Image 1: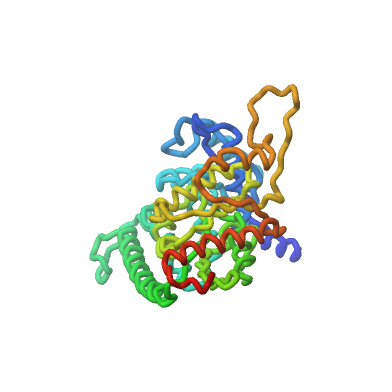
Image 2 (image 1 turned 90 degrees about the horizontal axis):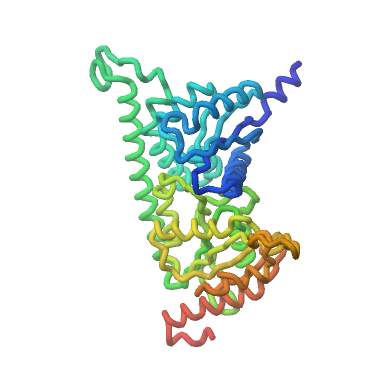
Length: 399
């Protein structure tokens, strides 16, 4: 009996995933989005047991999904003893309250799930401060729905806000004060980091960017011969890592920072903007793309949009298509007259598609299998050398 109790204590939370398929979304795209949500849940150590998808023009204002689909979800979570229901969009405070009431389970939306992962991944004081700020900013408009006991009146002599003030108002003030304190702490750290960046001199700066889990940290280790933490989970890296690299006789700085993701919570974009200063101040961006991912083109666009948001959209870019060893192709039958899809294209055909026509230098590699790494180093050396020569035209002894 005691052993059963111990086993239950270490059981992972069980979850169901819920998504709304808009009119313009096809089934394949919805499946890919839910695959990513399941990967997020796995990263948070939550086991996915089922998925629920409803096709609607827009999510229901009250419960995200319609009444019929909600009844179906309620029946399943009760029968299967599900612990948490995860939604693939950010829920409004009222939607969260209504869903908690209807389902009687813990409710997570995509934003809160990502924030939970960031909390577990943050190790340095700087990252922890950034994540805490993002969580409080997410929490502030949701206070009323998170602790129902706060709705009662707070009165009596000596209360902080005076007789009759509700506890919810007190808690809001506490959270606002905490947000202000965290922002001030971040400003102090930002000033310190700006001094550190200034002390690095005029070395060329190169920054790795890309969707989360595309192999940036693995590539960082290969190029810089360092041991940056790398793992096959989302957001393995939160803190910016900077290494001095020397290719032949040419030194430069290489940085790796947090990966981007579809629907990255705006609170995190705001609080991590200072961390992303390494990207904004870089002379060259190495945009790493997981070419084996079925939706790599959308991931590439997500990164481009995020770079625009943080003011780094006009930086020179070197596209690095990683994981060629994992790329798969399903050739079409000769009598199949339907249009070819991504799965039907060989790697050579893909290389000669829009990628060849784009006016962006690129390379195809596998960081894990070390395919194309020597050419990557040569190409990178040439780009850094060109930037260095433009900055120090009389410093030809390096060449």
